[in-house]
Length: 78
Image 1 (tube, rainbow, N blue to C red):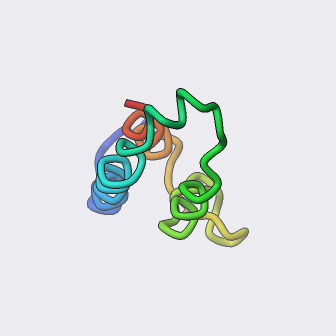
Image 2 (cartoon, rainbow, N blue to C red; image 1 turned 45 degrees about the vertical axis):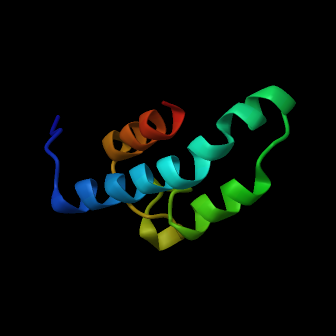
């Protein structure tokens, strides 16, 4: 199985890092405290192509590997 990091993989993860740092991190404590689902953040993530990451482009996804998807989940959750 290939786990190399392509330029596309790195560019995607950089977008995820910025989103996590500039949008999610600022509200994470509030979300944890209140338990309110952050619909606005999910809409922003979708606009950035972060939802449906591992789905094929033919069906509206971003066509990234599950490796990239797992790395993105790790970034947002940390």
